[in-house]
Figure 1 (cartoon, helix red, strand yellow):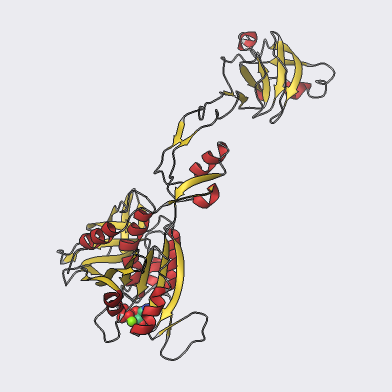
Figure 2: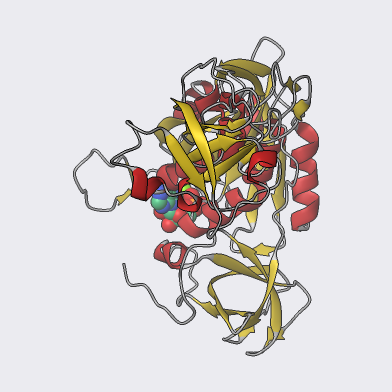
Amino acid sequence: MISVEEALDKILNFVEVLGREEKPILDCLGQVLAEDVYAPFDVPPQDNSAMDGYAVKAKDIAEASYEHPEVLRVVGEVAAGCVSNLTVDPGTAVRIMTGAFVPQGADVVVPFEDTDEADRKATLASSPEISIRVGLSSGSNIRRRGEDISKGELVMKMGRPLRPAHIGVLASLGKRTVAVIRRPMVGILATGNEVLEIDKPVLPGKIYNSNSYSLAAQVLMYGGVPKLLGVAPDDVGQLTEAVRHGFDCDMLVTSGGVSLGDYDVVKQVLAAEGDISFWTVRMKPGKPLAFGTFERGDGKKIPHLGLPGNPVSSMITFELFARPTIFKMMGRGNLIRSNITAILEDSIKNSDGRRIFARVVVGNRNGKYFASLTGTQGSGVLTSMTKANGLAVIPEDTKEVKRGTAVEVIMFDWDDLEIGEKINN
Ligand code: AMP
Ligand code: MG
């Protein structure tokens, strides 16, 4: 048996960062930038107002107060989106809206609340004057040109994974498309004579193919593009044919057929058609794992990850081995999740020297994380995965972790499951 780390190393060693593609920014969420992005102009492009108010000279209102307001002549109005050639001369003001460019001569914006605008509203048109009730220092309530980004600046570096804010910044620079590392296409093939596609009626002796769907959803979640290759029976010929339909993919994932049973033919196909490494990995669930490569004919080798068929095992082995592989192909760093430490609320026994990944619900109480088992830990109990928000890691050499002990937990997500909350559906 090899360790989880050894298995992952071998897989990661095989794959490389994929090529680049240029595409619309909104399609790039989660992808990694394949170019440096420089600013073609200042953002914002001009000094503009951060408030609705009056653009004035700071000097003119230096002495202003509620009791002794400064009365200025209003020479015009400027709204956001307008280009105006108004100038603020000494003793004058321009009425200005948030986002409007600050007129020449003004160096401060006084918000409406600090003027008598509300009292004058009715008469402002006939007697264009405004009383300023506060003194403000130069630059107040003005967003400076280039305050966010200055022209020529390196805004985002190659290698940066794009989050929603990055997509927004690219838009603020007027970039409609951007170069990114392309998403890997991952072929997903379920195997097993008993496995039935979900568009078929229920049949005796059969179970529905859940693995293809949980695995495809994981591919999507981690940024790849799933290609569903259906279900192949435990037959070398048909399985070989089905695998070939995935030869246009960057990686193939199969579920089932890697145990020691009579019908576990995935290994045979991989051995006959490609290079195989077959391992038993020191982990639970998910001991049997096949990894290998298929030769496509044109010299290109396609990595194949043969996951076990049990629904929980296939999801957990995907999480541990396929997720980092997808991330590596996408050019992402942090291939391994950073785990948290939580206090275990149940005892867990470890009888056979494997690393246990137990499904847990993690919650926070008084600033501490607590993890409780989701219930039955059978590797066929897929609902244990829907209830869990993390996997508690019990080391190989630990015979038992007692309730109250701190353990490492791999978090799937940080949704609002509370400690002790047992979700039934
Ligand atoms: P195997 O690894 O092929 O021996 O399968 C282990 C267990 O997982 C068996 O009980 C299978 O019926 C089940 N299984 C295999 N493939 C799937 C699938 N695609 N969807 C749901 N269960 C599966
Ligand atoms: Mg099977």
